[in-house]
Figure: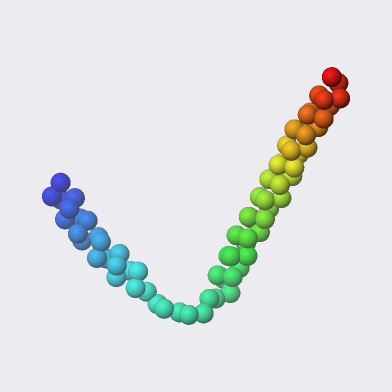
Length: 71
């Protein structure tokens, strides 16, 4: 247990020094390319999800309407 505390005491300050990296204010082109690629993935996943939800709602509504007409 003492060894674990010692290791954590050594690693914790090292991560604090690593976090104080360069403070570049402008985002590079690669950051914008990455964000655009991420946005394309999110939109690509939203389109099938919306189609699935609309189909589900149509199916639920259609069953209720046909069930009422048969009675």
